[in-house]
Length: 485
Image (cartoon, rainbow, N blue to C red; front, side, top):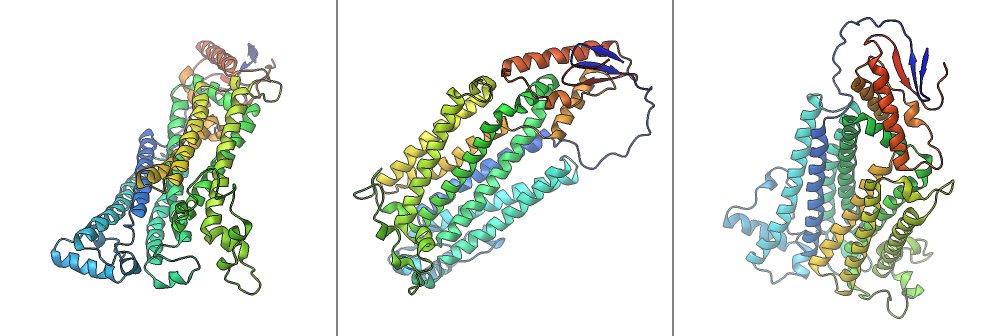
């Protein structure tokens, strides 16, 4: 056994005999690159329908179609008789009787087409995802793990259609007015938030998996740079930043869902000022926890949670608190990443590559934009363009956080193994590159540039050693630490 440098050693092994050809596996080790681009394109469609759904709600068009016809509903009314029939059904709804008793047929057509387009968009998303997903799985263009994820997303898309109708149905019933505080026809804020939550979940699942596939292909396309990136990502000094990004994602998601409650209760139409709410920074406690919203009029056992979920004043105050907490957390995260130090007295910024740094700057800019849109939506009493942009901003902020997470999260052992295997193939040997180099803990003072230089030097040593190694002879094992002869 011969030692080469400090990190490379050649392990003499018997000559490898050619095995019988194995049966081709149904699933690939890595999903094809086109699947990643398709997932990101599908995520773009979901992003669009989330924004368009907000416009449908803001224009009060969501209750114009009083039936759920998943197949035949894709075709709008074609004749005057069809329009009259659908208009007659809408006239039976609480929204028409209370809010729109003087609406004409032409006015009805405008809100009908808005809701019809929203539902048609959902059908397009379902078909453009389920059919290609089935093709990729049947043709073996994805890994087994990704095949299961695609099936899960497909099921969630179908369930989202059901939640959408379940939400609309809640606004067509008269018994909704038995709920304290409901004086106008509206869908249940609980069902609206569930609909929004499902849409966000579908979008983030598509985005996360699409980014993961493209990242994996980037690592495999240049194994030497891939190993340098894997070593950087495995640095334990970045653990705090990685956990912080996860915390930001959870906080931003919860804030967005509280916005769903605000929208469902029309809570943005009160206290149209900032930062005050009336004479102080919060409404009086008697208003925040008003016994009027409790169903249990004797023991008031549901006083707290009913007010937190059904009292417009309390819900808006909660959303304000969550939004300011999220922004403060993002600002603190940016300050720490930019000027803070990790264990060993090393500046956190020096451990980050260019993509990580741009991602951190990006989420701060998105947070600033989202706060501006939120305050503007409030003080201008929810104008449709700004309110729709505010809803889009919440999803854009989560997008930025997920993109940053994909850049700072360590790769799985399977991906690291594939990169090592590709590195061995690039050297032209029958050997393999071990994972110990990838998983080795870098020195406390190591920066991104230093680790990249060290990895490049090691990969050059691998290639030089490979030139003197028979194709089916010794194996080259790259490991951290000193090699023993």
